[in-house]
Amino acid sequence: MEQAREPIPDNDEVLDAYSQTVMRVAAAVTPHVAAIEMSAARRNGRVRVGAGSAVLFTEDGYLLTNSHVVAGTSQGHAVFADGSRMELELVGADPLSDLAVVHGSRPKVRPAEFGAAESLRVGQLVVAVGNPLGLAGSVTAGVVSGLGRAIPVWSGGNRRVIEDVIQTDAALNPGNSGGALADTHARIVGINTAVAGAGLGLAIPINATTRRIISALLSDGRVRRAYLGLVSTPIQLSASAVVRTGHREGLRVVEVLPGSPADKAGLAPGDILLAAGSRSVSNAESLQRLLFADAIGEPLEIAILRDGAEVHLTAVPEEMTGNGG
Image 1 (cartoon, one colour):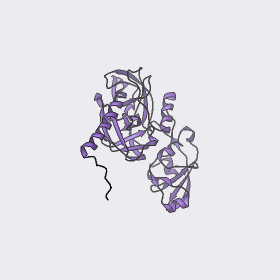
Image 2 (spheres, one colour):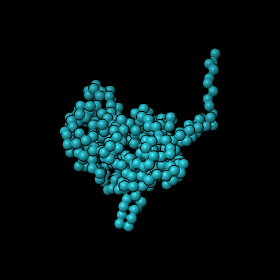
Image 3 (cartoon, helix red, strand yellow):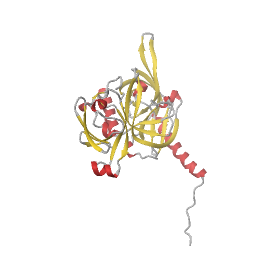
Image 4 (cartoon, one colour):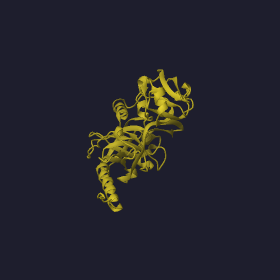
């Protein structure tokens, strides 16, 4: 006797459920996302330099955005979806994470709720909300397509690497830089960045490391950061490599920036990072956690897998400067 089968929802029902979720998240997140325009003093007066989006995250008017949106600026203004406006001052920026904090007066709207990017999974639905050029509530949706990525970008003519990026197929445009990436509970799990080009969905995760960065920006206006200068992607090790090394995961080196500490240490594309400072590294954040101020100029022992053999190298992280690196 055949078992009764569950009815399969038709396409209209599936699309409606998807649409309802996206609309609900967009409605909840949009009030917290502002359009910002930042300017700098010039001889002929104040000149608009940067524009994008920002996410309100405190009740007393602190907003989170991208470092590249505010680069070279000091003041500006924000406009929220309800039309309310506030003047802004730059608090601090961290080019290596592409995060910045700006501050205005106490807003009329409530702050967004931060989530935890550590809980994200590949294939999970996410919603990107921006406020480009005052077009309140620019919304795209998609799924998480990659986690723990490190990407090389150009900034002011210098090459640098943004660590631990979330990749999604929710397309972004430059005006959405600094906007919110939200999960289906309308919690902010990332800050969108279009620094790599229009149409590519990338976001800086809200996790333990970026919370530390935000705290440093709030207290000191800057983050002293060490850097190695490599582009990497997470990788699962083969069964034989697990037996030889005792590590199940690592970071495959995709690119090493010329002249960087990683280059000087002898790291090369194709190497697999297993551990740094005696700590296992399985994603970009696990490496990034080791590269704050106390790591600058200090020898860092690195274990890699190269041509099937475990190799030990020593790198000396350098300070990330405001000009790149």
